[in-house]
Image (cartoon, rainbow, N blue to C red; front, top):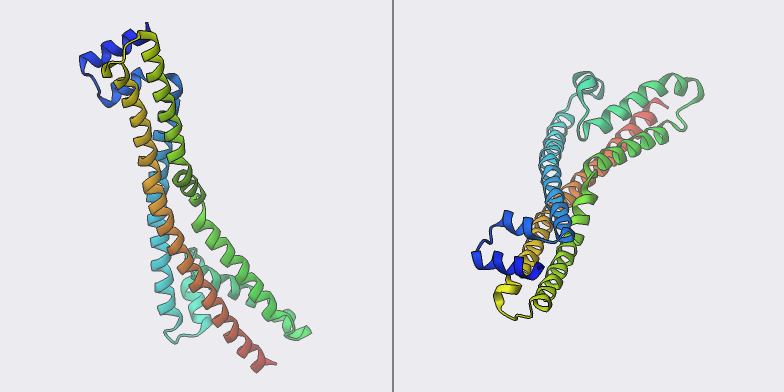
Length: 235
């Protein structure tokens, strides 16, 4: 019965994508649906990361211009204010807040440990910023590596159905196996459709975030040196 239905569908020549999905086995349907949902979610992450990474990169470049423009740290701190929540400026603001909190105690107990606390605060903030930029990238990496294999699972299942249709109908005509092969290849295509952009954009964003993280680390080292000089002068 199943072989006759598949053969009839093939004879009608209906190989549209929707029809391929509707005539597919329930297991292949689940694989297809999962891959479509994964692809949609991947593109949502790609768009979000495109704007968030770009915003962090522009904010970092803008802050570097302000920081090295020659104005005092206090003036820059007041200029940025509470609105500095993106990019390298968050490291600077966190360090300055710790510096202001430590001034009174440093005057009483000396400047021992002040620089260490400031470095620790910048390191923690750096890790937070990088973690925020890297959030949900693991999903892209997972789909990029597992998507083709999930599609291959649907392919194997579709081919199994094709051979079962041959056994049921006792007919080796291509029209018997064509629908099963078509749905199998459709599952493979969906797996690649999800995996290829996920892999490409994961590599792009990972590289961009690594560059931003390197800039953060360099700034933290430079700012730590500036704080160290100021502490030595006060001491």
